[in-house]
Picture 1 (tube, rainbow, N blue to C red):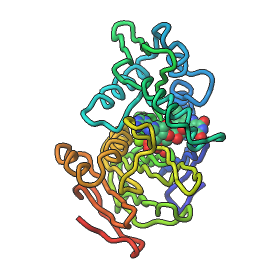
Picture 2: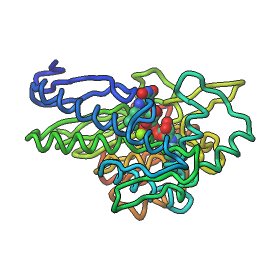
Picture 3: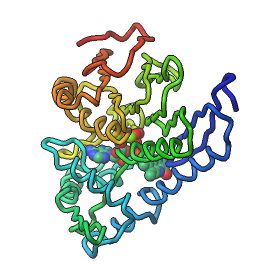
Picture 4: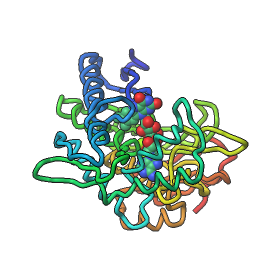
Length: 318
Ligand code: FAD
Ligand code: MG
Ligand code: MG
């Protein structure tokens, strides 16, 4: 359905998330193909069902390697490398803790401290063993589980962008629920909102104008539960096994590839504002917008976007 006389929006629910595709042509067949592509990747990568290639690896933990398709292998290789960065907050082997906390799913609960300590022993990323020649993955210990929830949507958003480009589209926007990737740029660029943490669903604190870029936001307000006055959100500290606790409500990453955005939201979430900005000085292609609990908005740099403040209870600093 056209939003105005140029933009056509198509929607679906996949990966437990609302998916939105905007095209500048009326092409339902193309949108259906794009959704099918997302579904194919979901079927390979999900850990929310009994079977997928990632689940097959997890179910064989401690027993035998599992041969997977090349894209799954490459994504796991990339996720393992990111997990091994110094002081990385990202850990692809975080699965046992994610499954135990169940944050954002039915049956969430705060695990006893000794259980967390035990589960942490099953999250060593060096025990994810990759065999390049066999294109296989082996989890060395029984009970280990890979979880690509912090990176897979970014990877898939990039594949959809590539697909649309291959099909001859020059303009498009794909929103996988927190992960936005764009193809080309309409006049004036794309406008992408930054949500007000814990605000109404449509409340924005600012908007970004971007061209041909990905925008990924990760926040403590997305998936969480409250118990006895404490809020537990879904980004876990891989060293403690508890939700990451720092000054941040959300981080937005602007980058060319959405996989970088998805990964770096987690990396800088773990670092906080100061160390996050320092880390990004080595990556001028990746920029962050931090939103703190004290209602400050901090930019690591502003080379590839314009920002408009929409809520004057927030202050721009840094
Ligand atoms: P991000 O901040 O990008 O990622 C947070 C997620 O990463 C957590 O939910 C957890 O899964 C994982 N994680 C937590 N801490 C760490 C860490 N330290 N290092 C690495 N990873 C960490 N949701 C549903 O409700 N139902 C579904 O059926 C469903 N299916 C999905 C299928 C696929 C293929 C994918 C990619 C996601 C699916 N999801 C589903 C959503 C999923 O459960 C996560 O909530 C989602 O991927 C989180 O993405 P995000 O961008 O909101 O948060
Ligand atoms: Mg994500
Ligand atoms: Mg992420």
